[in-house]
Length: 394
Image (tube, rainbow, N blue to C red; front, side, top):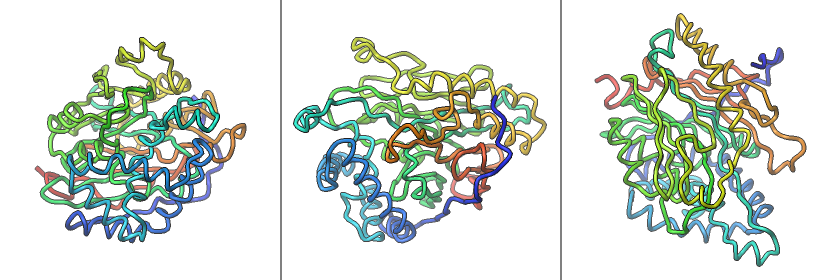
């Protein structure tokens, strides 16, 4: 395993935001708090979509509008929250919806449009991440841990915020999100952690829900079976991996796709998932000659597994955090390694990096994140405890 660098990056902390009240009020508080970051995200994605697909921002929001009614039908309160974000940030509802459906818009690039532009339609990488759950035999200190390295475009690093959503009677949430997004990865006061990984693969063009809506709906649940039910009963628009962990010492991984789901359980209390299908390749993709979207995932998963096995010898949470940070800082295959760094061989707009390395201690309720690559940054201990909220002390 690669050692941590001797020099640390300049100290930086992720902004922390807390919102509460009605969906519209929560959204307004959120939008006002992240106005600069949200506007920076719009600037970045306008350039990114322009370069990758030849789309103006007006055309991006027009495509995103396809998801407005499906989201309103499924979760009208989340559309209200997005409207509040738009009001608070001084932008349009479709701007916020596009930020929440940016993965779906990427995968919805029509072949007809690409052909009309004289370019070949190719597979656009989704978020590259490595997620883990560790408890029982895998956890020497007896705690339940969940987390991930969230790898995505380096250009949005300054738009990432930590948000706490107080929304009784639903559980209180802590999530890491790009400014304006209503859901991504995080944990709740019911002791459920949700970590996600892009999987890739093109399926039929039937409209499904955006991942931000599905993920937020999962974290809005107060028990593990209801959280699983969201994943099993909703139809997402694109494939995504979902790793659920709960404080009682249980984890399950679902590879969710529009064509069906596969699932996995931990081995001796440890489960690691990346960006390739590990439970089984869906039949439509297998028939089309599936190849992993992110070949580096084939390296990242075993390296993380090997590094996290050292948790068995931990004598306490402080040592566990050190072991986990070390494991998630592995550089085999650098720059597209477990700890991802920008590849100077690629255009600047396409640079990828680990935006956040997260660690939720579901036993103590402590939540830690790095503001960037974990190899050269210490964990930031968030000012909130997961269990300060409804269901938290039950």
